[in-house]
Image 1: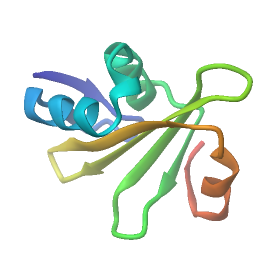
Image 2: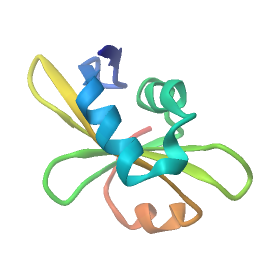
Image 3: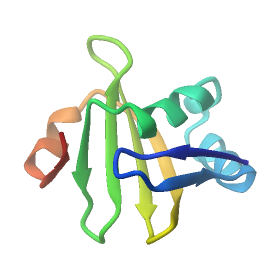
Length: 99
């Protein structure tokens, strides 16, 4: 398990169970463990999810973006999922939380 700090100063956990879930559902994510952590701590933008979760987005290449969805609680938080997409514009319709 690794813990990284979000832009709001909340410690976010990425557990072995969650990482196994992410890589089973999105096998292309297998080599992106450290990039997932970096997307939480140094995102290009963070948006509000529909159910209170945070959506961190960071570009990997010109046309590929890493998206990490996580929940912040008072003292800590946890990663829900992560995936790659070419459609980062879809998040721009949401409320921007950072910057």
